[in-house]
Image (cartoon, rainbow, N blue to C red):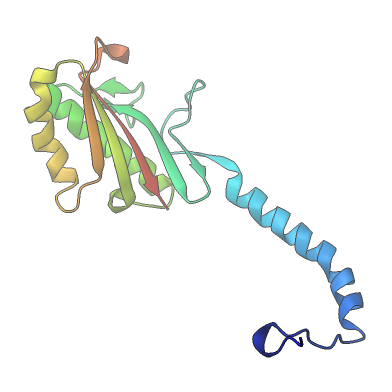
Length: 165
């Protein structure tokens, strides 16, 4: 039988094949360029922060911002100094750092989708949460929190986040 309707073969245009054959390489090159751009890894540089040779403050891949673990340090001081005052002061500094990184990436805390909180002492969980809620008062990101044996530089808390542009 004869095929009719939407799936019926259409008559070929005489120049259609030649035009497509000429344009196909351009479409492929454009797709490669776009995919390369979307998949390229870019470090986030926070103005005024010192360069840390062993990791970036964050890395952007596509539309995703991978924020490194932030501890309660004031990176605006030279040299950077630990925020004194215990778990709440360190949590506030760590989350200010997350905010600074997200803003340097061209985003904000509103676009943070997930955080992981590492605590040197799980007994500090409630005190950390009091500060955490001030930074994410509405629709907070998903989160996990763990007690660990110890954190770098004697920190009480480290917060690692994942967000979008």
